[in-house]
Amino acid sequence: MAKLHVTTTINGEPTEFLCEPHHTMLDVLRDNLGLTGSKEGCGSGDCGACSITLDDRLVCSCLMLAAEAEGHEIKTIEGMAEGDKLHPLQQKFLEMAALQCGICTPGVLVAADALLKKNPNPSETEVRYWLAGNLCRCTGYDKIVRAVLETAAEMRGAAE
Amino acid sequence: MTEIQYVAPSTLDEAIGAYAAASGAARILAGGTDLLVQMRSGMVKPGLIVDIKKIDELNAIEELPDGGFRIGAAVSGAVLEEHPKFGKVWPGVLEGLNLIGSTQVQGRASAGGNLCNGSPAADSVPALVAAGAIATVKGPNGTRELPVEKVPAGPGKTTLAPGEILVSFTFPARPKGSSDAYLRMIPRTEMDIAVVGCGVSLTMDGDTCTAARVSLGAVAPTVLLVEDAAKALIGSKLDDAALEKAAAACSAACNPINDKRGTIAYRTKVAGVLLKRTTAIAADRAKGG
Image (cartoon, rainbow over all chains, first blue to last red; front, side, top):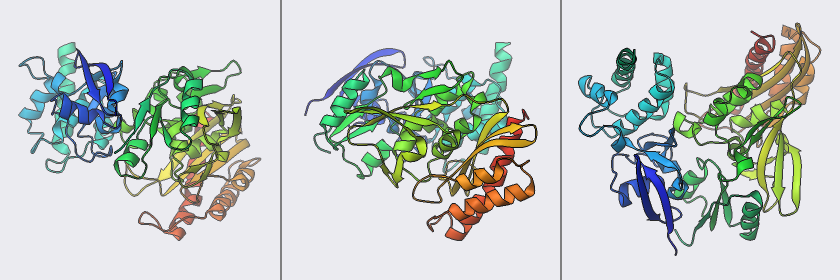
């Protein structure tokens, strides 16, 4: 069976890979490209642990065929920090203990980053609705929501 | 998984050719939020996946010269939400589409996929039906147009002929004083399947309702257009008597299942309750509220 050759951009780097037609973007990120930050929770779009952006739009990488990446731009949790410098959301999640086991964290961070790019000043309700597709089984959502709100406030302050 | 192929044609004719040639073994990939889940669970094993997202007309949002809109079948809810005007004219259609799944799912899920998936509980479909949207379908034998309510044929089934692809939805121009709304009942606040869904589209002249379309989801094998409920609203001032009559028409139209989300009696009762609530929202919007 012929594999598909896909040319894409991942975290700003031009990237090529070969995949089977039924492989998901999550399969290829983790198994072919060694980008294991995106986690496989449910595999059916319910848990959000595999969240990435496709042309800056938040999607579940388990609900996307790898072949669909052709000509598009993918960003994953691996592209969030700049070198050794953590993204403000990552830093705040550490400071405020907004994670425990960490399986949901990459997806939560990618989703929260997408929210703050779209809306730098979200209300608590907006944060909760936006993150409704990111399930956490150990921390609970309160610390996550507070960390996102606090980061948003700091980033707005820094931008002024 | 064996011998599966993937194509992403750039024209509709190529897509129809490939889809029709596979005679039933192919599946259309729009947002993929249903198809990939079905493939993973083994429910479907397509021989060919036809990705329609590289075809311009399936991704277009067009404002028509008469004031109507044409929306490509593969446009995602998140993209439609960013359109400067569509959501102001058809807020109910947008809220139906953007109640589907999570933010992540809304980044991909399309109205065309939601309709062709054939779920009786699909959230965008009642709103499309209430809006009077027309589906444009193209296949090996040419193009045809049909009202959205004629597309579903039962759970998981549509009236599309073999090889036909849903291309776009056309929304009529709206008279002044028109708006719409979609509400659903779910046991939690987010991320669940409708127990009952209700779409209402209205035109108001002052306090009088001059035109109405009412639809229900999740209470029958297909989404329903409830003409008797619309008749009860038209010509009224949406007073209690008219709303009671319309609610009773909605309950009478129900032919639901019993499941873990709701019993037959519950769904039937809630259909009438939702009609009243949805009508109130649509009327408020129509009056510029």
